[in-house]
Amino acid sequence: MREMRRAVCPGSFDPVTNGHIDIVQRASALFDEVVVAVGVNKSKNRLFTPEERIEMLREACAGFENVRVDGFTGLLTDFCAQNGIQAIVKGLRAVSDFDYELQMAQMNASLTDVETVFVPTSPEYSFLASSLVKEVAMFGGDVSALVPDFVHRALTERLSRRPD
Ligand code: ADP
Image (tube, rainbow, N blue to C red; front, side):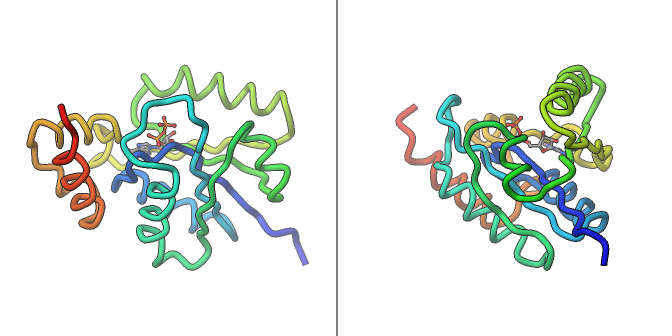
C-alpha cells in the first residue's frame, strides 16, 4: 500500500473566508488527507482568538471528510514533520502574492524536503482577503457573500462590541 499523501493549508484565518474554503476543498480532492493549520503565534493583532478561528474553520470544513483542523505554533516545517505531511498548499491570488510565497516555499524546502503546491484562486475570490473583509465589515459594508453565514454573524457581533 502506498503512503498516505497529506497536505497542510496554513494560515491565520482571521476569519475564514469563502476563498480559503475553496482552496481547502480543492486540496482535499488532490490529497488523501488535508490538515488546515491555524497559526496561533501571538505576533499579529487578531480580531478572533485562536480557539474561535479553529472553531469557525471546523464548522466551515465539516462537510469535507478528509479534512481536519488543528492549531500550530513555531515552524510550519516542524508541524509537517510531526504530522507526516509532505506538501504545503497555498492559494495564489495575484502576482503580488507570488514574490513572498516563492521565497517562503524556497525557505521551507531548504529546511526540509516538504514541497509547496500553489493553487490559483478561483477568479470570483481573487480580491478576497481576511484583512479586507474585516475592514469593509467595520465600516458597515456587506460582506455576506464573501464568508459563510455563521462567520458573517460572528463578525457583525464582534465588531459591534469594539469601542472604536
Ligand atoms: P495569512 O494571514 O497567514 O497571510 P490567511 O489566513 O489570510 O493568511 O490565508 C491563508 C492562506 O490562504 C494564504 O496564504 C493563501 O494561500 C490562501 N488564501 C487567502 N485568501 C485566499 C483567497 N481569497 N483565495 C484563495 N486562497 C486564499
